[in-house]
Length: 429
Ligand code: RM4
Ligand code: MN
Ligand code: MN
Image 1: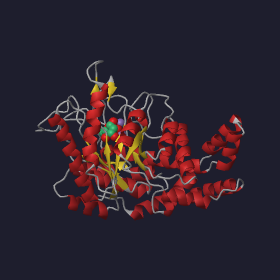
Image 2 (image 1 turned 45 degrees about the horizontal axis):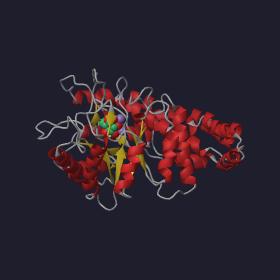
Image 3 (image 1 turned 60 degrees about the horizontal axis):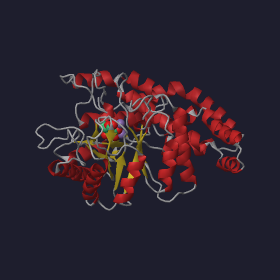
Image 4 (image 1 turned 120 degrees about the vertical axis):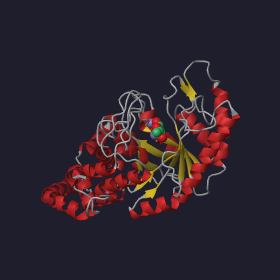
């Protein structure tokens, strides 16, 4: 079984359709009272897409252990099958972001044929210079693009250039660079010199970018380095992106900030200076926990979308971010978590579309804090589930993706074809 049968999805949908129609009609009537057209919102939900990270389809883990699930994907072909199931049911995840060398194959043309057949495209290729591969000549233990050793830096640069080539073969249009470079001890690293080495390495990668590509830099304040990281925050990130040129932008991974940081304001600043490249959505309580998107801070996610919808409405120059999930599923079935998270991000988007922008600007101008805040809350508090379900149904997806997935028995059937891989390593995400 490599897909869930369309007829099966239809059959399960029939059981939910009458209730959905009632909820949808009620919501349509409710929205029309404030002059909003439900059909327009459903159309927007149908258009919204968020990419799935190939590595998210496997069970993650912590520094202590990994508890594998059954029927885990063993390679990029298995991962693609799972991504197709996620997209078939959710109809909002039609692209995949691969990570190299984890997803490296000998024949990229064959891989592209497979993804085409599954109705999936590729966005944002990711390089990996945060761990050593078997037989690798120079270690990344003390860094990669910013390493003190020129040989290690050159090896990391070449890897990124190779990844661009893989991406070209797959039809991707951007390279995301996240490095684990940093230090664990005060004094271990010269802050300025390591940043200079990083920039010099990135210049060489930037020079190899095809004209219609972008390079996205991802910042992260800690882990694997716990005292300092070379690209630790959006400040270092945007400085590097500005230094490198217009094709280089910053990528915001929600979990890569200290708790309570005002991420939506960072997003606004990046938009203003045409430097918002894209997102890795996830949620966290303490740091880079990589919990499911919207599972803890749905209001924060909504406020981020408030900034995004605002930029869209103002037709802000240079605004075209890529949306992606990046989470670690330790105790859930990754397919379920990814479908659920895609819906939660889509939910934030639709709710942000409900905000009466002219009214909000008016309250802001008049310094009416209470009404401005209420305007946001009004949109956030409305349950738009019927819009999301109707959007899926109209596109041929599942009204209730998780229930449909469970009833299909997909996981059990692939488990027979995908024997568990031995070993009990901790999982990186
Ligand atoms: C990092 C970061 C990157 C991802 C790796 C696996 O924390 O979020 O996006 O490539 O994890
Ligand atoms: Mn990330
Ligand atoms: Mn991360």
